[in-house]
Amino acid sequence: MICNHFSGIKPHRQHQTYSLSFEEVYKFTEREELEESIDMVSCTWSDVLPFAAMVMVQFTDIGAATISKAAMTKGVSSYVLVANSNALGTVFLLPCFILQNKVSLTFSLLGGQFLLGMIGSSSLLLAYSGINYSSPTLASAMANLIPIFTFILAVIFRMEKLDLRRSSCQAKVLGTIVSVSGAFVVIIYKGSVIFSPSNSPDQNFMMISQQSKWVFGGLMLAMVCLLNATWGILQTSFVQNCPSMITILFFYNFFVTIQCTIFSLIMERTWNAWVIKPDIEMISIVFSALFGSVFHVGVQTWCLHQKGPIFVAMFRPLGVAIAAVMVVIFLGDALHLGSVIGSIIIAVGFYAMMWAQIKEKSTTLMENEVQSLAPSSTQKTPLLQCRTTGEDV
Image 1 (cartoon, one colour):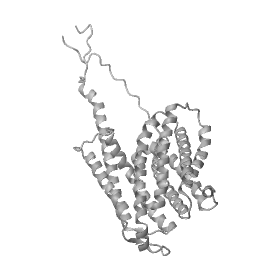
Image 2 (cartoon, one colour):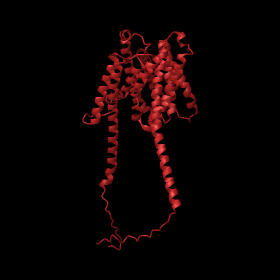
Image 3 (cartoon, rainbow, N blue to C red):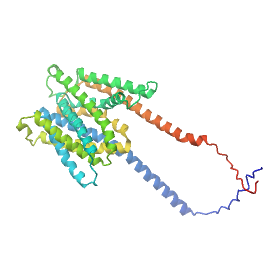
């Protein structure tokens, strides 16, 4: 049987020719250039806005820590600051929760947010106490340990496979060791004074009298990073079951407020301490509630949706430099050599971890593309198919 490959081919239609005037060609070219410029502007804004937003988040976070440190230096209780700032933040979020579309509340949702609230309230209480004993610079440096603790917990609970033959896994392990070593340097070694304001007290006396407080505050901040890593792992599973971010945010702040208030009332039994004074105490409470509970979480959630978690995490080391400048200018504290050396070591380990995550993500995308192309490549299709009809037999 001989198959006629060309029997089914129809003669080509004659293409009609169109003539465009010079004005039509000019208008078409001008419209194309306008569309390209619009796309370029929108692309630029989509890159600039998340970058500027995350820089603002770092400034507001360090600003809230610096103002809270100034308030606690003047005798304001850290428990009062935590309870009142979270209560005010919940009040700010209440109208957003009421005005949103109705969301069905389940026991698993409320129970999950209650558990996250316990972890979050413990983290906040330890964070304020750690900043009170040490410095916002140390707090911002220790915050870079959160991805490190997240990786360690993921390996312990077998959520992540540890394959030391892969370069990305080796970078993660090396980054973990380097960052933890830098944390020990920041906590234990304070070092000599690099820069000191003119109105700063005797630094030799401060180094001897406050070394134990500095170490204790550093250990408390390390516990904060561990709790935040645990909170992030648990939050991932809870968020998937609830589509409304406002609902999660409101009930999380609501439970944190209740738990922090109960614990703070137990720890702070002096009723005069709960009287809010119209000075740095009120400024600290309002600033922490507005930028800590509302602005920080809202902007970070939006940047996570726009750019992903790696982009958000890349800005953490920037907080160390901002904190060092703010502490020297507004608090009059001295900048020590140990803080600078330890912060650099932590940042190196942090970026090694980020590089490993980027490499793993690109490798996974490449493997998925190969798998998607594999079935189509195995199917062999002839260029010219033979149609067998009754006339060919």
